[in-house]
Image (cartoon, rainbow over all chains, first blue to last red; front, side, top):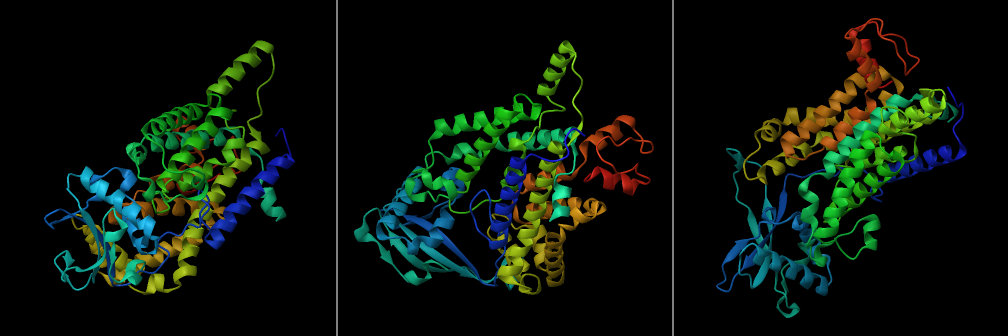
Length: 159
Length: 321
């Protein structure tokens, strides 16, 4: 052994670091990369709620926006859509425009977007899928212009 | 507190710390080499959801800076694993990893996949990680031979605490994951149909049904057992710090937990599981054991614990010094 006690700065560093780690973990505080480690911490209920974003072309036909086919930069969109209703009007228009651009990137000639809320119970089941189909409710319809934005049941936008 | 401080700052082996450096830096290099980061370029500003220090940036960078950051990170992490100028290369690699993963978490959801790896590396940033099993150490030895100086002592206080802090980080990550479930959900995390609904949703949202997830979800009793075992495993993980033999159960069990999450929900927590293995395995002992090819009579250069008497003792010694 060449040393018996660590230098003061080492002790200070260790306890400050571990203290911060402990505070974030114990309080659920997310100051990335120190986080509250809230992994599946909320109880899920039997009712499944999902969101679907569809592009609408000039003929009124709907095309589902498949984010999995887009670069990683777009793949948080299904999280963003959950809070879509709480965004200010200008924010909603910007997000809407971003998704319309994404639709065009995928080859869809989008003139507007629709956001549907999907409701379904996983039980009973028919084979490996739920027996009941998804009940779709139109939540928002938007285009790149604020004048054309419509909402339906905005209170449901942030479940 | 005094006992904790004594444990934390007890002498440790330069080789054990070097092994943790090699493992964590190699893992970081592999993680940073994934193509996901380049896909972050071209994100519209409206979709940018910054976390923490990412609020300082107006949005995600374009392709060029992302590629530079990724290449720099992979190169620096590889050099740090090899122990070349580790005082510089390790912090550079860590900073690249921190930035790139903060960008991934700025898409709307905080990602924990690489968090444990990054936090485990924090104590290594300021520690003498390259005094053994490194190119820096080889270079130093050559210089000493030329000047006629003696060798470094293989055991020191400076080598012990970084590994123990990393152990506490892994332990804390599991414990706080369990604590979050207790605080936010209580007993219903286990007693309600919670896990069944998680698994049904995971399967129903994927293009093809997940047979493993459905096997558990279709059997309520099994879902309760799996949920209870998960919570128990997370909450009691800190016991490994108290009884080293328990690491032979907990480390493989948590690896199994992550494998189960991957099989049922297709979520990749391999960096978390591998960080736990890298930090808790006594690699110098394992190397020595493999070199000699037998259990009995294996000297322990790194700890004060005696020779392993049985296979179980040997396994306990390999996991966690």
